[in-house]
Length: 139
Length: 152
Image (tube, rainbow over the protein chains, first blue to last red):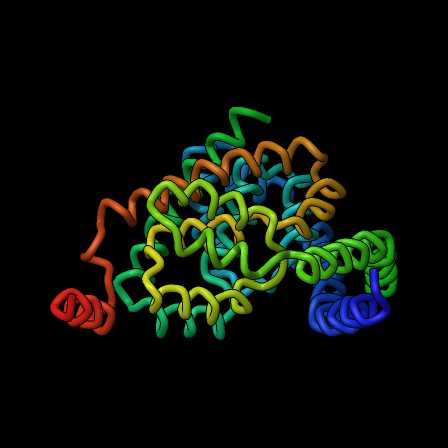
């Protein structure tokens, strides 16, 4: 590895971490509060008891929740510990990336057109739900 | 009480911080060494390249927004929308950085199964786009391709 490449990697890593680390920190704090104040029975009833409801619901929750990249993991892990099914947790994590940040969505909309954007959104939701069921069966 | 919860949150953050830092650095190393020309060549290829585009997406780190200008440039040069969608889907849903976090929070097998499932999902998305074909083309690109066909 050349010095130039190493410098580039270090610089880009610091740049990426400047946005990721603070949000990851907040997600960790939020997940501790969630675990403390959210009743376990409620989490189990919504995201664990009935996977036929839990997985589609977790997918929609993931799509709609304005969670930043990687910040879903501490929250998803907490929900899993509190009784959410593994399929629902998996769908929540996938759902979060279907609609990404606003800048990405605007770019995609602009570059590939609204029909492509809407089709990708709808197909992603359907396949994420199916993927959640697959995870539930496999794990 | 709140101080205790905050301390707990900071503790959990500090416990996973080294993994997050390591994952981000690994992602940047892959970006630095990923041959852009090869990615470009595969993404402008024919229909069978949906599978290859999916595979490249699975191992491409970083935010998807960084790839969109390149994908748009490839699109205007004739890359199929189905191939680009397969790449976008697999790149956003997995990516190497997520491996470290998923392994830490849910175990290695969680990531392995999800990787396999995303491979099928991204391919299915690509083939769905291939079936839907011209219905999904932006009007500007449809006109461009009609003009280039007429010119031929």
